[in-house]
Amino acid sequence: MQYKRKSSQIVFDTLNTIFMVLIGVACLYPFYYIFIYSISDSLEAAKGIAFLPKNPTLANYTMIFQDSNIINSFFVSAARTVLGAGITVLCSAFLAYLFTNPLLPMRKGLYKFVIITMYLSSGLIPWYVTMSAYGLKNKFLLYILPSAVNAFFMILIKTYMESLPAALSESAELDGAGIFALFFQVILPLCLPVIAAVAVFAAVGQWNSWSDNLFLVKAPELKTLQLTLYEYFQSAAPSVENMRDAAASMSKRTVTLSSIRMSIAVVTVIPIFAVYPFMMRFFVKGIMLGAVKG
Image (cartoon, rainbow, N blue to C red; front, top):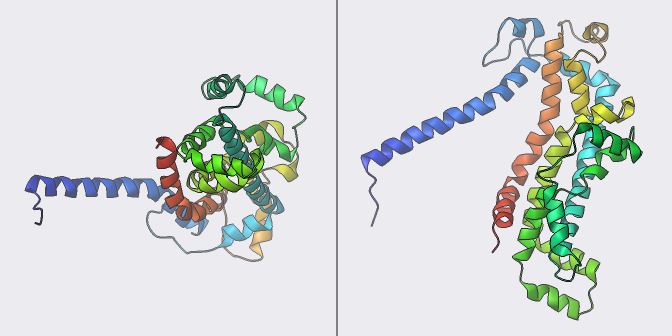
């Protein structure tokens, strides 16, 4: 029997759809605006732009990728994202696995201690002193070691692990599997959905992070793309006036500081936009399975 919807339900669904479409447009339009601004003639775009690019050009991107600092910063951010997210996922997952083991001494106390770190923070100055004392200033390891364990990620993974049948671990132990073999060969492969979700969280966090770079890294070769973008916004990077001469030989169009900022923002956002849709199904599934114990 086919269900017949009431007129009130049809009206609600229609209004709800229109509202959601408007919300989606409001969320996506800023990114679209930045993109069309970056590929428009800078002087024309400065006069006003809404839906279509004006006198499309790639002069802004040509100028950006002529700057070796931008290219180097991009690779630093990419390396930080891949290595940092990988280490975070691995360490958080292993800690979660240890907390699921009832034989771990002081398991409940240690678990509570890790949870407290989600709510209490020592502040910027103690953090700066600690990182300096560990010798992480002007070191690439600054991007990886402090974030190796994340309490929130650990909780998600631990909850998911506790939903796995205990018989799997018991049978592997009877076959002689040690703690590392059990974790890497049995538990970790079964946790791929939640691992993928945590990997997305960690990767986005690493890619967008820049404050540690700002406070503790002065070496130009270790600057991330996000800090470089910040410096352009503050006009602390090489001035556009000094870069125009190099671009003039390739393009007759004028570039401005605003157009360079928009172009760098696009370069910064594109990697996340490119990866996130492919990870979405793992992300949603992993969060649902890791949030509620089965």
